[in-house]
Length: 245
Image 1 (tube, rainbow, N blue to C red):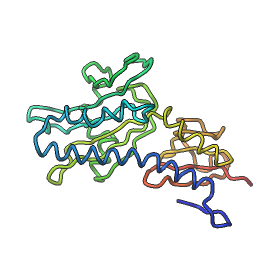
Image 2: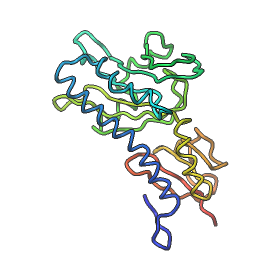
Image 3: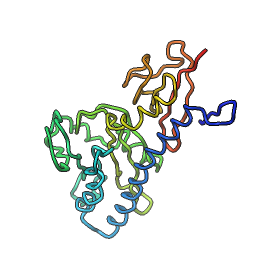
Image 4: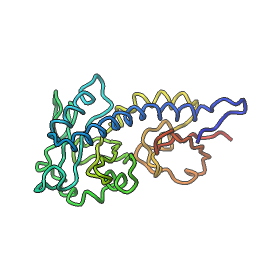
């Protein structure tokens, strides 16, 4: 929620939250374009992998990309009657990654080679798939450490891809928190006091608050400190600001 100062101007926390909302709105806009293209492509019977790569490659290879991975995850039987879960997912160029080393071009996710791929057997129960399927709306999962792809701290944003009124998969993008910090830390500093970006569940995404470590869970009152919450428009994230007595 946006709060105002006594002079009727947005409070610093509200301005920060609004700016973060605008950053993520760019990702949402990109996902919406991909979603529409995939829905049209699936209806026309085009090659899903080729279409998906053509959509995500520019976003993954731009200068200082915000996205570290992106693609389309099709439900069972969507790509072909014999197919199970179909991952058309690519990772952007990486540097000194613990799993893939250094790469100069997008790399397709190779599920059979992943030690943790078994957890995808029940993929419909996973938050990034389950929530869009239940709500019909985009969703932000995380922050969390991605053990399947990058071993990075991520936010995963997914949106439902529809066909004849039913969800046939999700289009998604992984936002690397370390990269997001470049844009968000200056905004948090401008608040003028201890502040942090948190998820809907209270998990700390980025922090300029000594008492809140990244990855920790915000508790009610946070040890007696008074916190104000400013929702980031269009997202499930919020900025929390420590108030002075």
